[in-house]
Image (cartoon, rainbow, N blue to C red; front, side, top):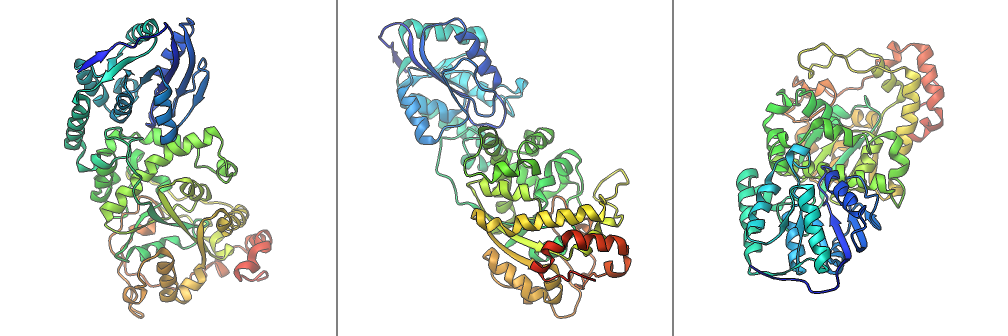
Length: 507
């Protein structure tokens, strides 16, 4: 490849720095740029796209993410581009006639899952396709040279860069499997940008926990066109970190279903830190962030967290859809914040199944001591809560899910008691809402107990591990077992909404 030096007055008219959209931080590049700018090197304007990294303190403009059209315009306007080592970014630079200064992300600094950017960039640098900076001094030297000639080196491509990127993609496919050819560029950065695939249909069960979602979701999972993945909200803590039992009875790390999901989504779960993802989750998927999640214009901090964390969730859900070979996924996370987060993700087609149960029955369930057999190596019980707190939670959860449609979320409300009275009719209503065939009559054979098939719920009620014959019946033990004072307390707390769901206001 040959190059022609840029001819112009000394100085850089516009410097564009791009760290990409990978969920790993790349603060090192932003810090180096800020340190170089401290010397007043002769730059007209500076734009830093910082993604999940901390923003620049010395750039004229900073932005977390750019739309594709905005990104293309910035490449056209830039005099010099400094970027991370993603092939898509490099290819776009060269398509705009720019030889970029490239600082590859490195595994040792926790900037990527491995050092594939380093290997790739060293090969391109060997052919003169990029200006490679592995150290701060190398970056400063290359920037000073750009100031001296007034801009970047101009690319007159002989086709080598495009061939190198194609070869690199083939090598990544060998490493990660065929899935690498279609990984979103914002995470894997091993292929050029491409159109978004079809959204993932997610049927989300929203309810106060202990409202009967386990039996209903297990029955839904019997449908051949549905895959129930359980409470995705607990994947990091109970799956990747604690390695609890999957619904199939195997530890999460040994479950064939989840192992294949991890392979397709990330080239294996070893490329993803459960602790790191749990931290990212707590930046956006918590009750305190609900006011921010329902605003039409998200704040920068929340918007960044949604892109960062939501991209990972989307990849998991899409991979689970493929491995489960079913057109609809059921997520029983129940949390209001998780539903709102999924609603914000453009690649998720969300439908909310709002499940309601008599609050006194819910409160009674929360007072019972129940072992958690999925926790290996220790004796642990499910959480218990005071009935008064459950009453308040019942009000809040049901009010929130009842109003999801105001946010443009398709939703339907069913009562647990109606399901018990007419399982076939209720399940067929759910199937119709989910967009799959009504097959409840095939699943429920009269009065015969149902033997549930093996499931792969990543977390949830311990009953998901029980494959004993299931007999659907009303659970009204609370009428005699719940302390009368506590029952009255729950009734008083929840009375404002009892009538809406046809529950008696006095017992």
